[in-house]
Image (cartoon, rainbow, N blue to C red):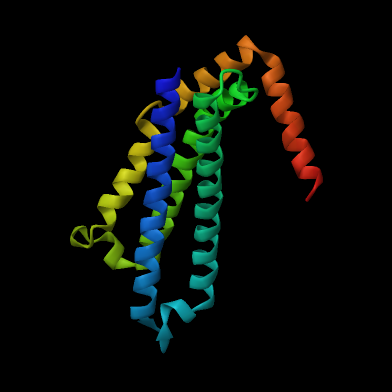
Length: 172
């Protein structure tokens, strides 16, 4: 299953990279585009939308780094205690990052307006690539089956995950 781990991490990395690329392009564009007498980067709704997209990107970056660190420990330790968590979280992480990448890509296209729709801007190409991350290395159905398979083999992994999530939510 190590190969599936690596390809899923690669997929998450691609999703995060697409998000970052779209944010970079949109940020650059917002300084140049003038609307209602000011640049787009000064418009309150644009700032709100961009902030939400950036938050989504940063959360996925943390997810990627966390899962990468776990995979590194799994590969370098004979008795890695969180192997079950890793096996459970990678399909979820891949699904989550892929869907977030699609959402952010669509928001970014809207931030560009008509320019974001034009093929020669390369923005539609990046958006289409974000969609591939939801399909490549496991569709939603396959990932759901994989998730269920892990739970079925060891229900305690799932129970530990739920407890960890609850514990983290209590700190908010």
